Image (cartoon, rainbow, N blue to C red; front, top):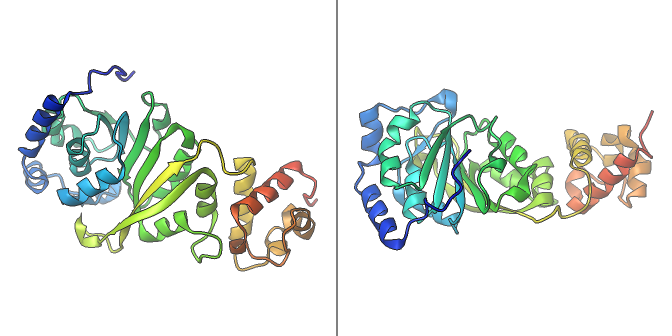
Length: 297
């Protein structure tokens, strides 16, 4: 069990003392060099060393009261920024076994505000950690970012916010609206459960090693309840079929679910294409699909 008391909350003088110690730590580049902690491709690591940039990311996740869950702190660039911006408590989840050594000095300087847990975020139920308010902040490995987001959205109401870095293409899919070329399953699921916006982009050269693509910081604020009533399972079923053949008319792509009869019952033009429909329309289809009334045999 994690400590849920208030002992990690410092008064202003203690916070200033802690931040002075953090400021006095070796630079991230020097630390990584001394520890020979090279980014590992197998872990999808791309480090951020620019403290001005990481502090900007940290501020975008404000307020930093309660518990801030950081996924994959690596050498601690974003972790330092969160602490310097006044985070009450940072719970860092990291599977890289080099992390305890490279973060040891930061753990000491944090004066109890930083806790490190060795775990794989893909298997770790972070929605059960600590009492609220809780938020997630992360520079996510590109290869698992979408999977993690979908998993966290299943428990969206357990989080106050999520401030996450994605490759720009994925960020556009998350925030796309009907009619946008990037609009699809991820846009609908996110928009059904939360408000999402792209805050700013991060160029490749800000990372070590530099990826070949631009990244974007996305802020996701979960709603107290889904925007429209429907089953997530059936919503995902409908969107999977619809966008699996996104260039086809819905009467064709949804044929196995009832096709034209299903669409007419939902008051949707059978000749429409999936990118034309808003979230409310997809929820209508999901509810009709759940009723089994139009399922083809």
